[in-house]
Image (cartoon, rainbow, N blue to C red):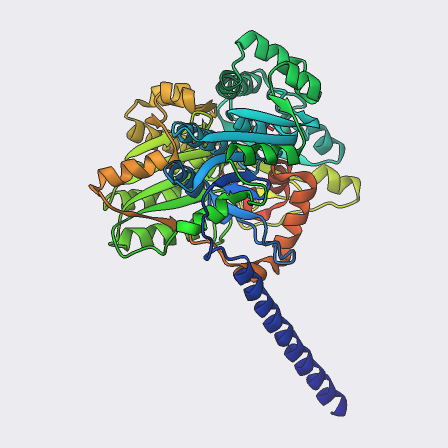
Length: 584
């Protein structure tokens, strides 16, 4: 009995200590949060709006990762919508005299860089200067910086201007070697998400669509870079093919940079541009601080809500990515909120679960009956990401968006050979003919394959049906441009998969116009998760393990690994595109 009370007391003490630790940890988080607040920012005269390494542009609040152990208050995550609005505001702000782009690496997607570029080009119409400086400059960072009036490079720097390429990883030999069987059922010869399990090389159909995509995107970006740097097409191709940007002297010779100078000299150059006296400070203001200087709490007037949907589509209730239960709640809240007069649904997703996509689409269709619903595409709106757009009154896409991929597939792994090689076998006792149509050891029965094939085909027909309704085309017309093929936003506009090429800001303005609003606020959904909420989320063992593995093997490879290992995904019919294209 004495030992029992001793153990109880020890447990109580441990719980008390844990509570005290969490209490002090919470206080520390509040202190750091307060320290990082920019509420008191005042923009001084002769200020320069700066886009630098501390600028992390994200498409959705759910993309923000609160690292609770780093206490990093320097890097700010900024929604692309807010970033664009800030640049538009700076154009007419007498205190902002110019923009300085100082980003060697840019934490932003291709369509986000497009939007930033468009906004800065508009800013230049004010007559204010735009300068850029680089050290080891990535291709995406140079894509943005190349529009500057002057581009300055460190004498030991480099510009990684190389064009686009994609590398597809294949697992067929790996699966064969270790006795992993994979049953794949798909509709669409272009549905390349399953190719890593079926082949050891890229199929002709996939090579065709990847080549078209890469060339579409590179044409859009390279044409703009060449025009900004005043190069003709042939000269620019030579510069890229020869990797001249990797050598600073060649970068200067071939007009990728205007001058090779040190960062201190660059700052002095801007001081001279502003006519600052020797002791006057050069005022640089980050995008985050500039936004904080003028942003106020939302008033009680009419609102246009932007509902962000970023990441893969899954069932369940979770904050990150797109989980159907969570989004059903968000959509119903927007439907019932009388202050919200119109909704813009911002999609940045390669797709995912067919069932979860269907649930989200249904709720959006109900929302559309009550108020305007405008869709805006980010980097990706493919497969399930395109499917959930089919409730829209109007669809805006960026030129470099990857969209379409109207196709369906199922991936069913099993481990019979692997088990047999290691002395593991199984036998089955069942009550009905198909009680065990699938097992992880024996795979899928012929009847099971037949049944899942019907499910895939039925889901594809349902997919095409909703597309025909929204795009006002026949089944045959959509089937001809479907088949799992992915298109750039530019081509999607040409073939009628989207209505307009435009930004999220364009979609918001149209939504307000359709709702008849002259004055309105823009509300963000879902609301950003606080660092304290992130603490408890990160304590989940599965979440921690997933992040570790994802960081080690990369996001795209991790998503393929999930197809094999995640029990929740094994039985699902999928609408998904598993590869990504970046301009880095």
